[in-house]
Length: 289
Image (cartoon, rainbow, N blue to C red):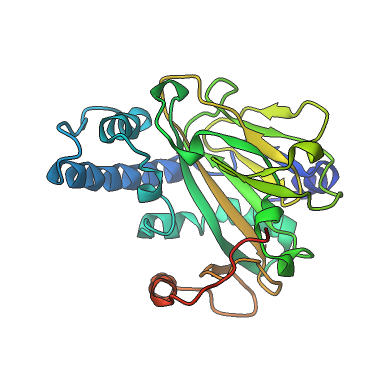
């Protein structure tokens, strides 16, 4: 296991840590190949139901879903994200050794992958397609979890699959705000956001990150991102982790990915848990607010 002492120090002092070269780029490329396959299937479905007349198969990874979304006239984000997309490639990526070594330095050796996860293909703002991942207003990740997790350190790993820049809408964070309370939030077209009266008054820190790097964010650190002002898609993953012995704040299937005490969750167990969750139609509270 790599030594992530400095990363952990920065994280606990600042409420975030930006770490380049955590994940082998070839591992990200394998995941991209899987997403390309998912998009192939999605394009075929859209062709079959008459939603589009062209599949845009010659377009590169960081452009194709934008063309498909524009042609279909709607967001396709949910079709490539959890839990619609529970591919073996995603499962394997959730066990990346470099990533988990860094997470272990923050939450300890019993690592649970929280079910609050997202794949975000942030479309070019110029396309004007209604897409909740097109903006990420200022929010705290802990605020959308149930109060049972208020004393659990839930760490977000924000992972760009392409280079993330100021221009294409990389992350903005508010350092040293993680020791404060969970702020009041309200619904907005892009999810949840801190109420206007509680927004931090200072300017955020914009963090650019190359493919292979990770931005680790404390659950109480306010953060967000602006629009994508390029003509390419800014792909990223939001993955959340916590000590498996503590409550996670979302009654959906996560999985144990590293442990010295128990067997980790298998792929079949993960799929089965999600199938059970989908069949369970009982009302369940998912959000704090």
